[in-house]
Amino acid sequence: MAELVLAVDQGTTGTTCLVVDPGLEVHGRGYAELTQHYPRPGWVEHDPGEIWTSVEHAAGTALADAGLAPGDLGAIGITNQRETTLLWERASGRPVHRAIVWQDRRTAARCRELPTELIRERTGLVPDPYFSGTKLEWLLDETGRRDGLAFGTVDSWLVWKLTGEHVTDATNASRTLLYSLAARDWDDELLALFRVDRGLLPELRGSSEVVGEGRLLGATLPVAGIAGDQQAALFGHGCVRPGQAKATYGTGSFVLAHAGEDVSPPPHGLLRTAAVEGTALEGAIFVAGAALQWLRDGLGVLGEVSESAGLAESVDDTGGVHFVPALAGLGSPHWAPEARGLVCGLTGGTRRAHLVRAALEAIAFQVRDVLETMPLEVLRVDGGATRNRFLMQFQADVLQRPVEVAFEREMTALGAAALALGVEPEARGYERYEPRISAEEAEPLYAGWREAVRRTLL
Image (cartoon, rainbow, N blue to C red; front, top):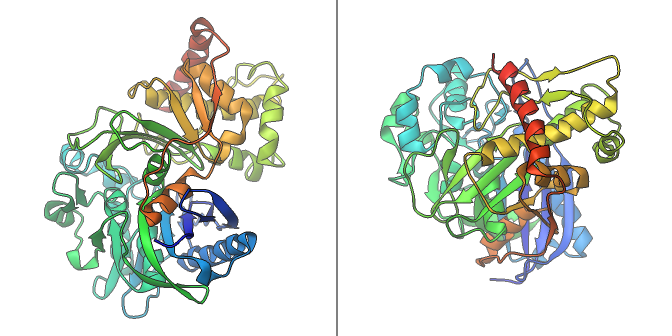
């Protein structure tokens, strides 16, 4: 494998690209924001064309930052927001609708009709609008078309744009409600359930293999790695054996623990999903950093998200305020797609600092909710929100266990680079946060959160 690769991390709010060498050192970085479209309450869409141009822009910026030309690269690795669903014409490559984003709730009613046990046993998932199957079903019904089309998650769309190949890997396929973990293939009974023809589906390929030769910024490069963002981060942390785990803090927050070759139904409240190798147990939290973005963009409470730590530290506590950020329903361990956000405990003395602190604490409380069913000795973390020192310390406090923050925040992209390079990462440098309060102090805080969640679920 050549010396340098481009890691493409196509996420919910933007695309990050890194230029990475075989030692997994980063030589260049680029980022391009992605527009969010909200055509109706609970609906979230992306423009497929903008997804692609964001990749081109971020890649160009990363190469310029590294002082390189596209031809200096040896390969491309792709990682992506997973369940976001696209449908396009095979002949023209033209999308037939905007992409339906993983946060979208439009198929909640359909999910209530689905056979929970069949889906849980076959796929390791739950019937929830989060996953791609009901999104694809909705798109096919909405467009009234089934012939000459191709379905894919974002990885498939990018590989198609690069190479013309229609492929995906198990980490992404296992998020569609159409894939059997045990058979490691598309499942005919599930395809019939969602009225999906096999001809719409991408070919299944390995997470670390050349799937085609692609054109990017004028250069021809092999696409040599594909993985969904959370599994790429798990791999990037070097979590390749059972019991090793990580949490990523982004738009949402996702806790994954490697589970070996186990394909049995997951414990209550968790998911089982394909990892780069074997499977992983997963807790999926839909709104983490997105809560702070909402306070900034929706309410004007924040000028910049980076202000949140200082504001949180400017007050001793939340003043009794709890914010349950169910802006896109609640994921693990509740799986309540129709839950909506709640702020409670307001008084005449409540200030914006209390609300901001409550939003940060909510991120940490949600991670604890997941870890109540997935006990760990140490939590290893990455993602943009790990720059928030208040949040990381509060996470250690409320968990009552150490939190290790990766020095390289872009662990998702680093995992994609490792897959494209064909190397297995080792655990890298971490900053360690130890709990600073006792269990006796932490438990009342968590009990208050649990009461707020109970009200949300009423």
